[in-house]
Image (cartoon, rainbow, N blue to C red; front, side, top):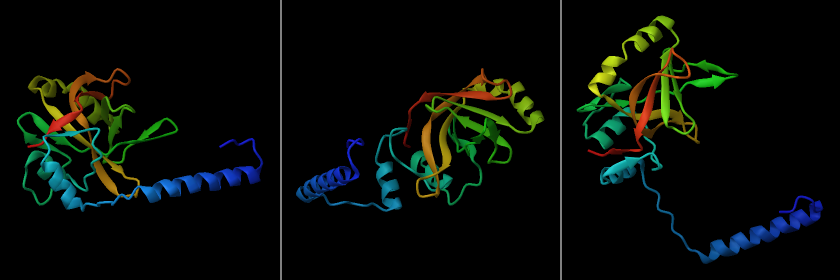
Length: 193
C-alpha cells in the first residue's frame, strides 16, 4: 500500500487486495480440524521430544507432569519438584519489569527469562533469602541437577498457561547482578517419557 496516495486511492487498493484474498480463499478449500485440549495432550504423548519451537500450551502443572514425564497425578501444588533422575520440573512465574524495577508475581521470587530464552536469572525480594541462595548454589551444581522449565504466562486469550522454554542448568551467580543465580539453557528439547 502506498500511503502517499489519496484516501480514495488507498480505499480502492484495500478493496482490490481484499478481493484478491477472497478469490484465493475460495479456491483453496481447507477444512480446519480443531482438536480438544485432551486430544492435543494425547497427540503430544506420541512424540519422542517436546521442543521450545512446538506451539504447545499446558493448562496446569499436572498436565505437564503426566503428559511429558509419565506421571499419574490428579494435582500438583508445587512449582518445582523432581520428575526423573536428576531432572526437576520447574514452572516459574515470570517477573514483571516496570520502569526498570523488577516486581515479583510469586511470593517474592524474581524470575527473569532472557529475551532469547537462553538463560533465567532467579532471586528473591527478601535480601536474606537471596544471599542464602547465592551462598549455597554449589550443592545444586555439584549434583548436576537439570531443570525442565515451563514458564507460566498469560496467553493471547488472557488465560494462564505454561510453555516449555528449555532445559536449564545452574551456572553460578549472575554476571548481571550478584543477588541472582543464573540458569543457562542446555537443551531446546526434552524427551517425552
